[in-house]
Image (cartoon, rainbow, N blue to C red; front, side, top):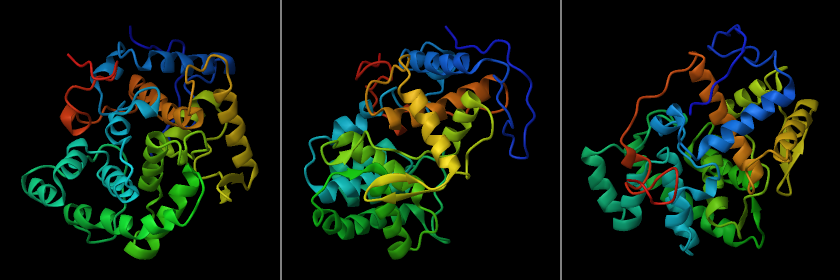
Length: 316
């Protein structure tokens, strides 16, 4: 049942322990794409050992909107709460019990929880807080301060936001008002959840620019140069505008995967391909002994205890 990679080649690693070429470099491009789509088709089955056992790494469904956060929050109409709770969820690295405590019991209950319980996950992505930040204390006030300010900003606009436009404006808020240096990653994560949960207000089909793992996954599929840190773009009137040849190449590669008739992702294709190329890299890198699974954390830190990655709320 495991996804395997036969007839791959040895690759040289750089000083960050990343491959400088694709393990599948000897394969025709079409077979590399086929392997990626095989990975995607197997993703929600959770029969592969890594996908089944290392849920803290592969912590979404094939389609992002099936995450329990979207189910939990979809009927919340209050814009202030949408921003506040989603920011807490993102800046806590998607710690489910931190979010649920705030939503169900309020900020004082969250403060009490933080006395003895973990406030955030540390296995998803690095958040570069301003120097000296007490993250527990910040989670009690920083996201709410953001919601207090940004609710009015969003209410003044009568439009449907793209994900990158939403991420950009919140990133600018955190730089200008809370002293963050590089908050784009959690702001992109925030924009993903806003779009997946309230697609009528934030466009889940819009372009979503990926991070390191995404580019590592594309590099394994397409070979050539890894485009990480080489793509120049801007967001103009909400739209992603490429500013160099590498940005055009990145879009070409994304569209090649999105519109391939083997692609099992039937909606929110840009976001879901971005997400699954990252997971694909993790899987192939662990399978080749270059990357190790992160330390497993309690299931309830990530999902409701009755949620199953194979099917909604069917965990045995």
